[in-house]
Length: 222
Image (cartoon, rainbow, N blue to C red; front, side, top):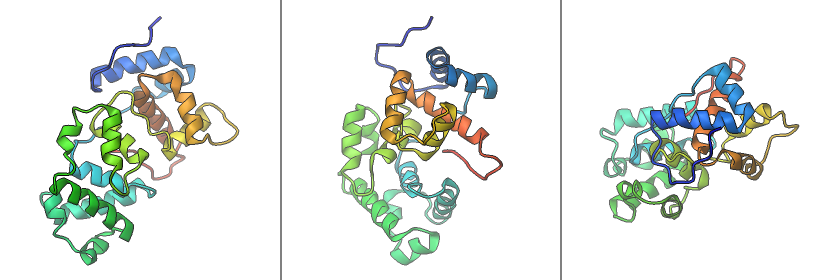
């Protein structure tokens, strides 16, 4: 039997993802069933930095496909996509690309914080999760979901877990045969058993969610 690790884990890699899947399969028979029927989930990773964090902000409370379209239009105009270059666009240009007024405010705030030196995304890579969360949540428009996705996708923390993610909530309800969709707090309680591999469990649940999309045009965090 594989015991849960008690030491601090390094950042997630393809090798440690595979190990985490083996551990989770022993801890939870439902997750084991996903692995047996669907195989390993993709790594679903992104490069750390301003473009990725901006894109995650765009993905808040909208479809990932819609956010990706806006992000791709932005990348076609702002080359390279740096905080300073982003700040050269005015409201009219950003709205034409597809930014809402709220997202303009949030993304400008992020770019301003970086260019003014208030936020150093490179330094975040060496900080603990609590400090990272504190640093990012100081900015308007960045909450726990945004931080969790950045930790999971870009910084590759093996135990990051976006408990408020709709895909994870839907997948868990179906997987665990719950009568109602769990709340984020209920999902967090369920996920306690998956520590310290909750980021791997999240990838498994997204894998399962996509397999049950019934032909709908859905995607996860490519």
